[in-house]
Amino acid sequence: MCNSKLIICGPCTFSSYDELYKIASLLKDRGITYLRAGTFKMRTSPDSFQGLRDEGMEMLLKIKKELGMKIVTELTSIEQVKKYASKIDIIQIGARNMYNYELLKAVGKTKTRVILKRGLSATYNEWLNAAEYISREGNKNIILCERGIRSFEPETRNVLDLQAVPYIHEHSKYPIIVDPSHASGHSYMVPSMSKAAMASGADGLLIEVHYDPSISKCDNEQIIDIDTLDKLLNDLGDFYE
Image (cartoon, rainbow, N blue to C red; front, side, top):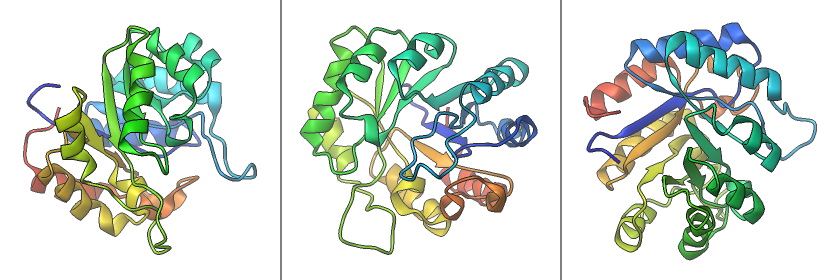
């Protein structure tokens, strides 16, 4: 990682090109160069919106070309890795796939930067071992992402484990970023948890942002709007990549 912090922003998912383009343009205007948007969505309920899939990926790649932004998106199968890994800038491996070792090995055979999210109840060592599945196939460009772990507390989506940040720095060579959106499940918590993550030494943030969170197809409660992002970026200072 460079000395600047990696700030990745964007919607959980999107339902049209116009929606995604508007979000991306607003982010670019604020100096955000990494656009995060899901098009292959792994949802707990089969009745939930599963993303636009290949159609959505084509929209992402079009925006990458038109706006010059770097694309961060989750790939959920070996077939998707073969088809899209070389076309995007960062592959995201979601929490549910941290234990999908064949997928990790497939990603390891690529040269594309990887964000590996911590599993819902994964220990630090399990998480680091998952990273090794990627690394041993040749891809060393791995970023770990703390996104909260399960607990007994029902009022938040997960519990943000900021102790993971110094632990990973002490016990591995990998940079670590924090996802305060999935950790908390509440947009009002995102700014304070983002600042806490930076105070803990995190190498960056992965934040869900939308110009109108109420129209998002998923995760409405944890998405921050553009005004909130502006204030957060001002509070964080001019150090993001």
